[in-house]
Length: 408
View 1 (cartoon, helix red, strand yellow):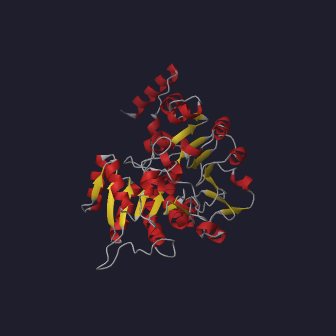
View 2 (cartoon, one colour):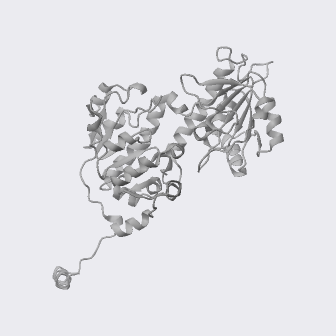
View 3 (spheres, rainbow, N blue to C red):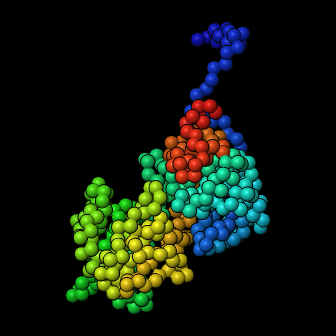
């Protein structure tokens, strides 16, 4: 089409009052640089931070403003000086943090933190449904907050990257913790997990064949222990066998088989995860009573209630208790024990999200374009878009796709 024809066409469009619309998928007008706030975590024994200095430097070098509260990285051994040299602004008043457009946290928001938030902010943090309070959600709705939950966000392959990263850390660390507890100094019977020639290795039973269970099994086998794995999902057991590349004992949750295996186990790892609500109890108190004296239970599922009937929440200061002569370790935030590694893993996932946010012209455009982030969005402009939370808290649910239809 020649220039004259194009001008005639544009004239017709103007006279008729027509204005062709661009598809939302190609709208990418940038709203300027990001303003990101990172408060110091005040949750009990929480040592992690969501962004490490290296990630802050990447963001600042790309023209973004990062404001971090003094001491936010201290417990992960990242100093204010490191953040300052990376280009972050160190502030001493937490209220200044909550003036940022995007707030990034490693723990769920508290009522006090939501009170400091401003209208139409974006929050990226974990949600922790079992401990979430409806008062927090209602305050966020009133402030028209857009909120994304770490544990619901997916990548391009449908994997939950935050959950997987933390699960890998917990899976690896649970066996290291168990090995220490089996020793005399840890309160155990002085058993070396892998044994030596002429002395049999310890027997490890793992309840759950997910990411935590797989990584726990990998470490146990690497240390030379004997491994038995239980899960009711056959496909998980097949996947685990394939990923390990070695034949190990596997079984569904048969009470008689489990009871027999537990009676001779040195270590039992509870690695079950529930998508909704409490983790089911699959190990009864009677089974625990018949375990060997000095054996060890690591209940990784304790953050969802625990899968052992004898489990009780402990903490990093007092991580264990003994019941029926069995050592119980029931700390809910094991990842915080390895805070530097956990912080780096979290930062590796968050940084590309924030960079893409700018490239797409803002968080709302990014959520619209990215299916995985839509899956992690539970509040959008103050509308609750998570159906499960709607039923739990009896708050009106609005479909996120419908909001996009009316918005674009």
